Length: 374
Image (cartoon, rainbow, N blue to C red):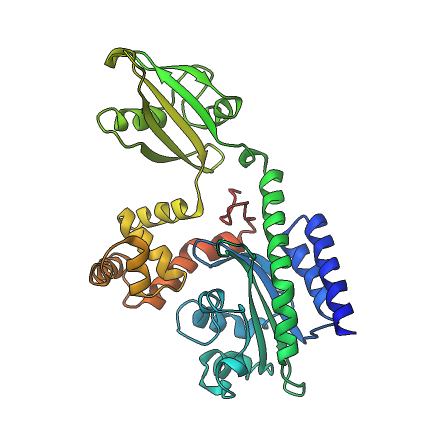
């Protein structure tokens, strides 16, 4: 019987993934599909930025009541606790109950003591919504199910059912984010390619997508080369590696402009051409922009992104190819620039300064997980 219910739930989730036009709609339909299998008194579901695992869009109306919400956010993004999303996202199953994680003693959890127990919802199941891939996985969202004091706690069958359904939910979230991206016309363009040459520089070739991007950049047009594109080209004139800069379109979209010299046999410096790619900035690049607002270096911004996703100093060191001692030095500099004293305070500042205001403003997330402009 349970196998049949799982199959029906998988089909319902697949149908929702094909039809939902927003993260909220998808979350509601996913819950409707899961409820017969894993009933809950309260619940919430949301998408996250895969780069930082911080929440973007979601459905919270049936989650924790308003009087407990502020404390929940403080704990979630500023206090080390059990079953937080970065740890779940890196666990074997991605799904766990608070009772299981605390070896039967949920009172050791700050979230349980300060929020769940006072709210009358002591039983909690959490899931990191990850896609299943041969080369690893990315986390696109989270699902939280809660049961009241007079209900039985969640079982191993419950966590197993959610774990089986999670990859289908992740695929649905990714599809919905892409649809939101495409519905936001200014952000639906593909990467554009431009070839520049001459003295002064002029556009010799440009794909339709490139001309669309140029029209969105300051001073851009059919023949005018925007200042930001010229800056990228001049930056790569005297060096072999490509030069990349970021710029903002008139609609508020961040784009990355990458320029590289094109070497032709028998060519001379005066006739040299440059290839330029203009494309939407990835979440990690947006994180660098956020870091720049606090005068962080690019490497410090990389550290912030990895720490926000729950990586230890050793793991950050391996990812960046530096020593753990160097990571510690970076963190000291970051803490000083941000005016914080701990990793938790740093992540909390990142969330409250750059994610929560966008979520409260109702901005949707795009295909890369970062917010679309309003």
